[in-house]
Length: 189
Ligand SMILES: Cc1cc2nc3c(=O)[nH]c(=O)nc-3n(C[C@H](O)[C@H](O)[C@H](O)COP(=O)(O)O)c2cc1C
Image (tube, rainbow, N blue to C red; front, side, top):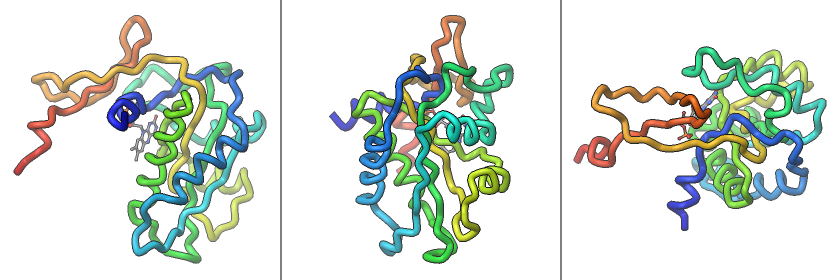
């Protein structure tokens, strides 16, 4: 069951934009992050939620998508995320959020997957510009953006080939392939 969720929880970057993700759903997902582990239990993470077209558009323009797909500038209008959760670090609680935001992101995305949604962690963000555009208080730093929606693409996991290439790629049918290293390669002792 958990393995099924983990396997299904791929990075999705194309969505049925017309399928809304409402605020209650986003709050439920953040509640999973709230209950997750936090270094020294300091809980420095705060969240900014967006599921409304104008705010979504504002966030979208400050994100970079799928660096390895060099000919693909990101999802077209109509295939963009229906919602976002921005994970913020509250610097008045802690100067560094350690790895808390990675754990929070995974909890949120597993919860989204369980609900038939999907998403993508995005760290490539024009942070200063986005902070300014959203009027985010300087005490918060943007750590990650989670794009969310109903996935409109198929993503499959492949074994990394003998050449060792880990770059994801998209085939002629539009299926997104993600090479993953073998279990025996990653267990070193
Ligand atoms: C910390 C982190 C930052 C990421 N940043 C981006 C990003 O800026 N843009 C993007 O399109 N994908 C981003 N991703 C998604 C990765 O590209 C993706 O996890 C990887 O290709 C493996 O695919 P999978 O999530 O389906 O296993 C990020 C993932 C992580 C964990």
